[in-house]
Amino acid sequence: MSGGVGRPRGAAVQAAGPAGAAEGFWSLERYVVFENEVKKSKFLVRAWPVASSPEALTLIRGASDAGASHNCWAYRIGDEFRSSDDGEPGGSAGRPILAAIEGEGMDRVAVLVTRYFGGIKLGVGGLARAYGGAAKECLRLAPRVFAKAQVEVLIEASYDELGIVYGSLDSNGCVRLAEEYGNAGTVVLRAMVDSDRLGALRLAVADGTGGRRRVVEAAAAAAAVEGAP
Image 1 (cartoon, one colour):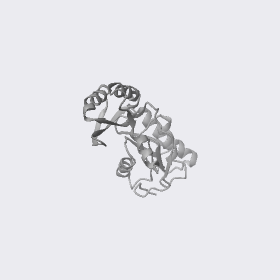
Image 2 (cartoon, helix red, strand yellow):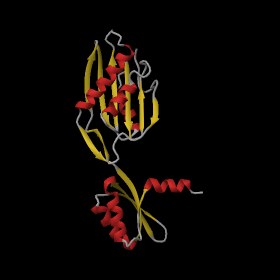
Image 3 (spheres, helix red, strand yellow):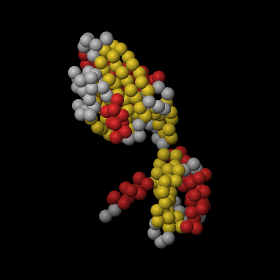
Image 4 (cartoon, rainbow, N blue to C red):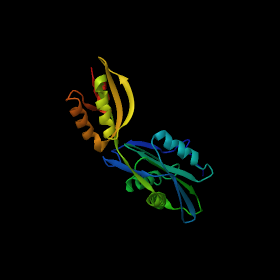
């Protein structure tokens, strides 16, 4: 039996809290490959660090082997996770792979496990252990990196205050994203700041502008606009 992720079977999208801690998350440092054999069936694991669902699916589709028995996979990116059994009994492949990602405390990771049937049936429990075990061992051995969580912020300032705001951004390690014209001769600055530096940035901007300007999280600003009558 062959399967491909271009037409995923049994794929499910669900929402949950972020896998990483509030201050950051662990992910893969690079693409890795691992192979394991269980009762003559070969389980080939490929895992990638990913930033988005489209990227994860593109990598999975590109690496899947149409000549294999099954191409089962899972990924987790923040509060989104998805998995596929690709024709294996329900819950015997995709979910165990996802559990391996979560069990290793990782986020923004995609894992594909390709099975080449060796002639001996494993049963539902055996399949779950084989898929989940191969994925877990791959992630356990893989080099990983800790990435700090970041927040996108907005700061509206007058032209005379730009130097102060720029200095506050730079001193707190922020990444400037864009500048947009605001109301009454002001400029709205967009930037990314590490979550653990957000408080310091707010204090620096408030002190530097005599309390006239404040730092607003972009997500909160967008929610306020959507909720306006």
